[in-house]
Length: 112
Length: 110
Image 1: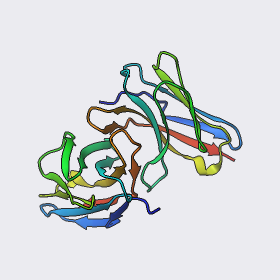
Image 2: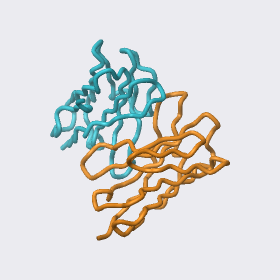
Image 3: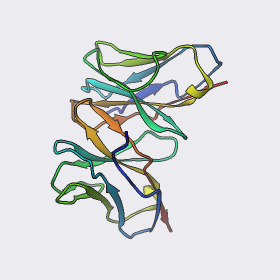
Image 4: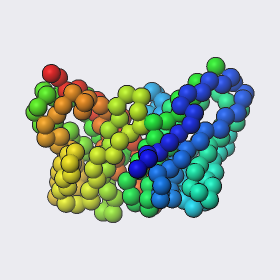
C-alpha cells in the first residue's frame, strides 16, 4: 500500500513569491492535515481537511491556505513568501477522525 | 499549547529496553496518548496509541498510569535504527489536530 506522497521534495523560492505544495494521501484516507516544522518552533499544525472541507485551522496568517479535492488529494499554498517560511512542510492523512496520522516525508522549502 | 513534557535526550545500549517517559498531567478523560518518532529528514512515523489501558504492538509497548497523568513508551530491544526523536502527543479530538512537543532525542549506543 503506497504511503503519503508529497511533491516536490525540495523547493527554493525567493521572498515575495508564492508556492504550491501537493499531497496525495493513502488510498481510502479522507482526512488530510498539514504541519510546518522548523528548528525553532518544532511541528506546528496548519490545517486539516476532510471531504473537501476545512475542519480546523492552526494559528497561521492568511498567507497560508489549502484545499482538498474530491479524490482527497490536497494542496497548500503560501503567498508572499517570507524568509521565516523556510521549513519542512509535512502532510499527513488518516482514515477517520480520531485515527492515527500517517505522514509523508515532507517538502523542504527554502526562501531566499 | 504543548500538553506533554518529555526529557530532552536519552541514551540506551543496543539490545536493551528503552523506556521513554512522558508527563501529561492536564490530559482530559477523552484524550488519547499517541507516540510518534522522527528519523532525520523523514516524516514522523506512528508507533502506538492508547486511552486508558496498556497497549502493545509489534513495535513497542505503551504503559499509561492509572491516573493517566503520565505514560512510558517501551522499545523492548533497542537497535541502532531506533535512534530518533520520539514525540509523546495528546490528541485533541475536538479539532483533529496533534500538538507536538519538543520530543526526546533517543540515541542507541552500540
